Image (cartoon, rainbow, N blue to C red; front, side, top):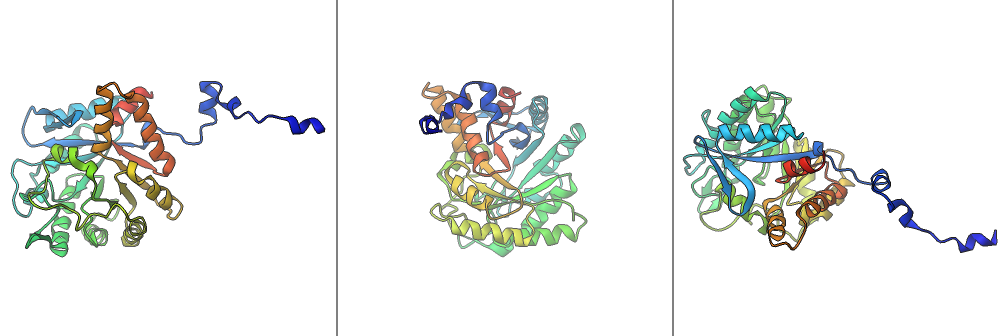
Length: 326
């Protein structure tokens, strides 16, 4: 019995082969948990690479169908759509027009791929001439006037085949307003994925190029969250759940893993995380310079988001991950 004291604990025993490492892995990441963003631009035969986001494109509907098909071929089943209209105005009216770019895209995509999940971004910033997320009065966002437009946008998207609505503007009361509107217009079963804790982040720059949504003046710090606040994020999430959110989201992902983890231990509905454009572009840029291995960095970041507690991840790496992890 005295020999027991001389036992050396060797944790490396369970790291000695790829099979063992996989068998004892505490966190599993699968392409089933990934959502691929698609930027759809009005026009035909458009495939314009976004300079700050290598391998990501603005696509006309015809080319979006090809991109979605190639993603389906490697096992991606869920997509979130962002629209780039051919005209903008003060209230973003093309966001809720029946012939709007996303409305047209929904009809065409569903015609060709009826079984995939199409989530539609619900915000005005891509459609307004000023680039802000709603109605602007005296250079401030009018929250309640914006809610009315978002209801119109949601109904238009629902009528054209959206499988899920994702309000992204951090507009107070939006989930309750949308839930009431959808429920009373025949869409009781349409789920809401709310950007519940969307921080005013420096990592959105490449997205604003992709979506052509840079604010004409000021910034969005008056309605997006301050990066120093965690308790506020929890409050925002709990409010959205009480208003009827089916899924809540933390955005960005990488700088807010602590928020994701805190919420995982407090709530009992699915948590989404958005691995945003800046996170993607940093990896791409560093890889191009030969400073990091792109595949390894991609896997490590996505795994960290899943380990923190995200149930699903919106990521521009969705196709690449699926290709590399068949």
